[in-house]
Amino acid sequence: MASSSGSNKNDFRRKWDKDEYESLAQKRLAEERDLEKRDGKIAPPVKRELLRHRDYKVDLESKLGKTIVITKTTPQAEMGGYYCNVCDCVVKDSINFLDHINGKKHQRNLGMSMRVERSSLDQVKKRFEVNKKKLEEKQKEYDFEERLKELREEEEKAKAYKKEKQKERKRRAEEDLDFEEDDEMAAVMGFSGFGSSKKSH
Image: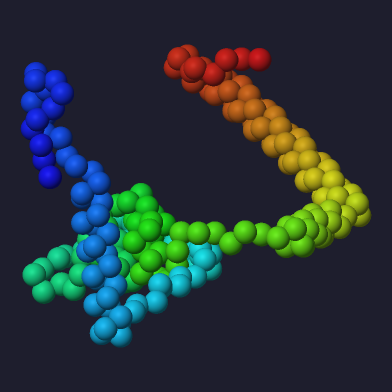
């Protein structure tokens, strides 16, 4: 198995006989196959589905900012963190939870392999056609008449805003006139010298 005798006397490393170990491994594999055949327990290889995209939204925000009281009797699903009911485990933060549900162990528990189905040329063409139709529908929705209506409404809003501003200015001018008349009356009555901060126009 291991021989310490070598061509170089200063080399103290053990030398392994690779051929001998390979023959032992082959014998062991043959014996295991014979035992399986005798017992009739030839396990067929597990056929897993190809990887497919999720058809649900991953809920990461429902427990955000909430306080939970955890006791010894609290079930694992209600503990702090994100619970995976497929693998029966709790993950403490959202990044690790996403890593977990996209990982090999979780996908294997769902019965899927990590291999992705190869798309054929026809499938790719169909997908392009579907996306093209979606774009065309969006362009049809953008109607010229609707755009004109929106522009008119915006113009009307701008006009109404200007009118409101003008009314506000007129009201302020009238209030200033009233104040000036009050100042004149106060001056006549002798109240003009009380250090008013109002500047005369």
